[in-house]
Image (cartoon, rainbow, N blue to C red; front, side, top):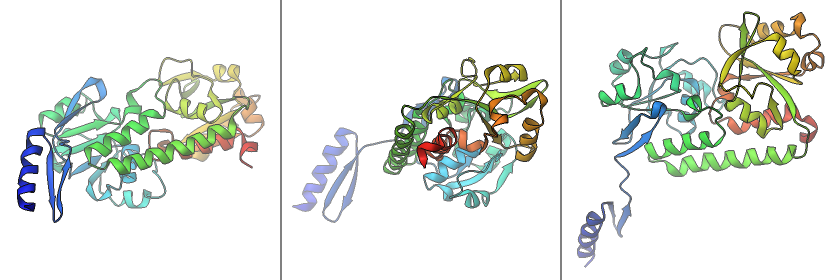
Length: 321
């Protein structure tokens, strides 16, 4: 009778288009997940046909998200590691072979025989012949982290990144656990700074002739808002742009956030700010309210909640005593 029930169950499941897993006590009906299609950078559509086994992480924050999902054993190579990732798994991540210290090429991807490439949108370009459509043409699945190509991106894109990875790797429960914990942490910070005056913030990414490279209407700016801060250049209709020192002085930031990455050390960037005579009367300089973040902290990553909490403590320290 049990065997007859199992056979009947398989017939019913097949008619419904689902997969059946048989156990000693019966059968379990599971949704047929593959294939499915996700839309990514430049509205490219990528079809996922199976759970990836040979993965390339081609930017630091993409590697961080994969490591947070517990997928380190599937990452066969990494590229463009220009920032530390979450300290919980940074050392483990650095043990993975680094294929290039810049943007990965199509030739390198093909040499690795990868079946999935995950990274920031800047890693998928016509210049390097690595667009999503190109990779799909070679039968390689790929996806851009949403934050990198979305003007005004907020924390919901991080949740979507993890949910996409959960679907791709058949790890939806793990993805939801990460998302739920992040939401709870962010809500805690928002509650702590509720009712406080907004603090004006300037992000110093790197020096440019006569000024600085800084963020506009982007993800970093949104992280500040959750923590009771406001990017002084949030009105720019770009994610990143050059600004003059005169513009910075005019907007009088109360706190400066320095992005710690690249060939210029954090100490050098701090010195550039403090010894710049044009900035001498800026409130953040006068009050020595300068903090730093690793680049991965202000990109979509497992540290999004931590970064908002870090900002909250820097902008409104009295709320966290």
